[in-house]
Length: 467
Image 1 (cartoon, rainbow, N blue to C red):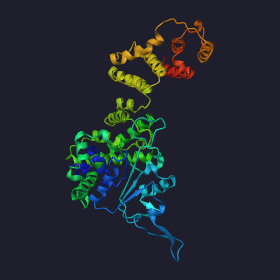
Image 2 (image 1 turned 135 degrees about the vertical axis):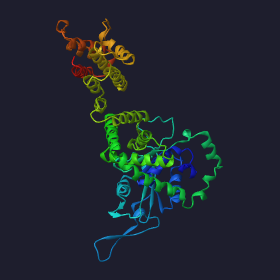
Image 3 (image 1 turned 135 degrees about the horizontal axis):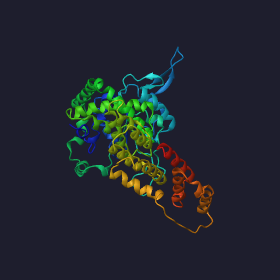
Image 4 (image 1 turned 120 degrees about the vertical axis):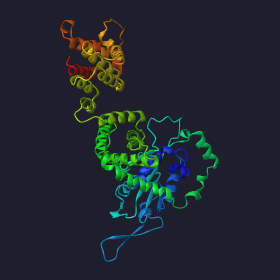
């Protein structure tokens, strides 16, 4: 049974596990997507189907008094009491903050304790279970004004507020729905879209949530050590990929993965492999989803695969030691020192070259690797081909001449010319490689990169590979 389809929300079936995981754990969830996608409709129907006392607040319009009521002196004490207004938060079981990205900064700060601690002004909200939010995606500074919906009023959230939402869920836009879902949506023929369908508590949903909670308790001890290992690897790889997350996020990712595995087991009758659950969790727990620059899905999948591979190996395994090294170049050197097979080193080389976006760095790295390995490693063709193509620029003798005119290019050449050692002084392999590297990059590379900085990195590479 699909939770979202049963509530009349079309095209969201893939979000059922994360929705169930949030309901079963009471972990806050933030929906991110365009207007009219169904975010508010889903949450309202969930609240009714769960039979919960719900509050729906438009965060762009409310004041703090709308949440807590009117503060009044409590006679005979030094404390305040709150005179509850209609819709105040005190007896709520499910709170939904809509338009969070249009909320004033001071009110965002007041959301922290509600979302994270379930307190207001230091007072516990005893009945509150679920804290959900929704927002339009903030507009990037470099947004193409001719494409898609851009939300000029949607501001980036305070990172600390984002961190209070363990689940951050991008919702599907119209273009991502199937044609069948679109037809049912626009025609209104689907009987589940009738609001009367979810006006009362739905026992099937309450039962799903209870079963998911029980399943979490049942699998926690069995998966605890493995999930801890995997989560640590994921977080370290995220930092390496310049997608750092906080210690709080690391902790909630562990709980989120456990809950999503349980949710998928309940929804799919135990046919839920842990690896898919781990990848799925990474897609719906990233704080960057709520920023102008979401993390690319392909990068997250690659991080998941490497973390999964690490966690699948025993402690102390040479292959694991290599994968745990975060620097791609040092990973190759370590694999060579541990005498891993040529096939493994070939794969590490292609990964390192493929991940490097700086052309000068790719040429320098390929040159160092080629010189270090060409006589003692039988690498695969997939590794030798890019190595030779890139290193040829440095290692192949050639002559060139060009007319220089006053300007930036001539200034670069004057710097290089003053640095160049004489041919007589180039009596070591490293000095000759340095000279060839610098000359081979003129003028095209050094118009884009600082030749002195790239030379320093090339020297580090040669030292690393014992050249």
